[in-house]
Length: 143
Image 1 (tube, rainbow, N blue to C red):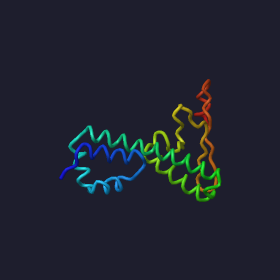
Image 2: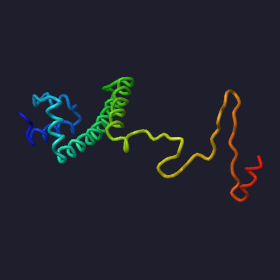
Image 3: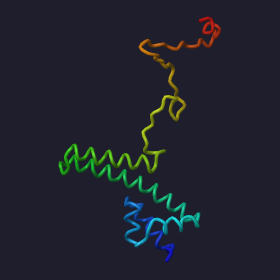
Image 4: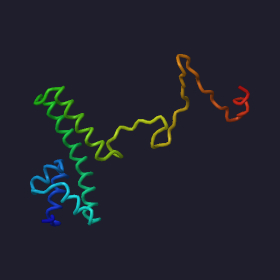
């Protein structure tokens, strides 16, 4: 028997609260194939599922704050808290990378800032790239 729209909304609520798709489907007595078959036929449900997954990242952020508070109050040890926080950070970064992923790049950041100098190392001898003098670029070509 296919899932009803109310079943899908209930599953999406579970996911939005931070629960896994597997546990939400188990509550409904449904398998993955039945769930995804219903999504395949409805653009609206697919968009709602994507939104629920995005909300899952937000619930991970809330769990991080909760873990921090538990460490600060002494209810949770430092190492245990670190493991929990790192796990939720990893989940949030995968669910909503544009917001929660760490931004590291050699090509620059979102504001257009780029590195001004790069050192290239071949074997054990470093080679530094020259800067181009904007007023006299021919100097660079002379060597």
